[in-house]
Length: 478
Ligand SMILES: CC(C)(COP(=O)(O)OP(=O)(O)OC[C@H]1O[C@@H](n2cnc3c(N)ncnc32)[C@H](O)[C@@H]1OP(=O)(O)O)[C@@H](O)C(=O)NCCC(=O)NCCS
Image (cartoon, rainbow, N blue to C red; front, top):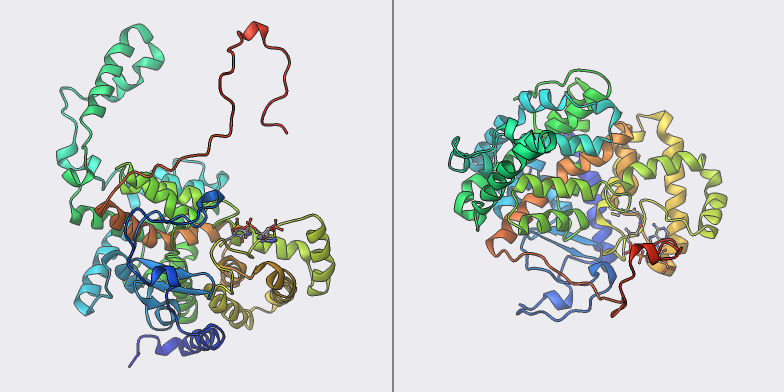
């Protein structure tokens, strides 16, 4: 029945074995009790700091059952999608809501192929000192550069009237010649702002939004690969129209066509990272989208949030941590000291999962499979296994802290020869599908995000003129 991955059957077998183990331990996927019945707004829920437990919207995109360790995209179990599907199909599924049939997939792949080649964007990106800047910053700049081509702001109807628009020269006037330039330029700027559409859908119709999503899903891989090349002071490589999305990503990064195993492993990694509920980067991108800013700005916010070490940046930190520990025999003493110092162990723990992360269930065995061919990486893998055992038996039992998606993804990428600085950009290259799917879904019933803070400050303070303020401790320095 499933002939797609015949060449990489051993990878499918690893995924199915992980699925069987998960089902044996936690059963089949099912919603938590509170999600089993339809809800009516306003919803009652218990909210903790960091919006823990808050329900901000309804979604059909994906579901995480944290207590059982289950992940579902549009009704499909993540294990099945990894075993039988591809990143292209999964992206289609997330954005359109259904798995594609053959002709839909063909058309989708054609669009991705069309958007994959970004010579102009890469040339512009090359004007930045990419080799010296954070890879996620470079990815974000590149993604913003993509915006120049395809955004409702740049569509014909949104083009400024040349008689009233601020020219590049006028735009720079306020900084240079204040008296002459400022009033005129500011006046024009305000006027332009008033002309902004009240509703994004007035100018950004459905097909244009979906086109922008495909542009981003396809193009961000090209940018990430371009960043990888520029960091090595090499020219970016044109995509190969014969290759899949995962294979192209690896090819454009390395200049070498990947083996079927490498392509499949990257494909599985991309599927695994594509969506994950209202995580910080998804939420960040949705918050920006909810202001009716466009999808490129929204995805830019997602990239920024994903960069943090508590989120997507953890995978890079994991590798560094394993290198810091050294051989597996040192895990015990390292762990004791880390516990004494109350250190956070990267790659463990999750806001939602209080059970084994299903993504780690797949990536762990994949890492083991890949290092068979990479003798030099075995010590690192052994250290990871030992650390996992230590954390699971201590923090797992005590605080339900288990490995998360980031724990083994770094080893998987490193085994494929990818530099740690590129781990998080690869995460973004995948997660952009989830960001786009959730943004499109949210905009259908948009309400600007606006939570409140609990004010715990003072009232009725008497204003003291600056000259009379004595030396006081900076309130931030406690
Ligand atoms: C992901 C993460 C931010 C979730 O945090 P959270 O839901 O806010 O959890 P909390 O910060 O409330 O932590 C709860 C308890 O577990 C501990 N804890 C959580 N993650 C831990 C970790 N990775 N290592 C050690 N202890 C951890 C906390 O110290 C806290 O202990 P306490 O109750 O004794 O104070 C957190 O687990 C973390 O920092 N993990 C490491 C970074 C990482 O791998 N991120 C990728 C996530 S996919």
